[in-house]
Image (cartoon, rainbow, N blue to C red; front, top):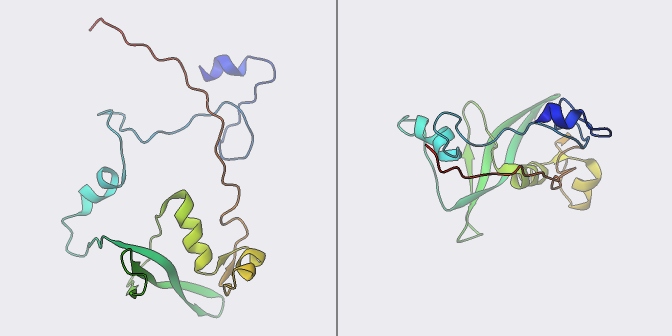
Length: 158
């Protein structure tokens, strides 16, 4: 189908759908190609690691900030500040021993990074946040993409 679209005049087919150009691209889905079931955080991650003794899920809380230590030009994440969803006054810091993994989705990941001091200088300054790392792309270029849905048919034969 992609090759057929590419033959049409004026239709761009960029190799990478993330390079900012409009056109026909391949979009990976969240569906398991073998079972045709949707993959999400539980099936894609949790089910494989839930029995590990060093794995713990704390529900009813949200991350508000990643805490950093700086040693010269080296910046290291040391922990995460969290707050109860039911009581915004109960701020707690959870320390990490090896690494901190941020996986809060396309909206909340940049928000947490910016609240932690990572982002464009002007954005952080306007929010009165001390900058830890200048990274201008954080929180930028978020928009919905035009989408072409291909026709779908139900067949009555096996």
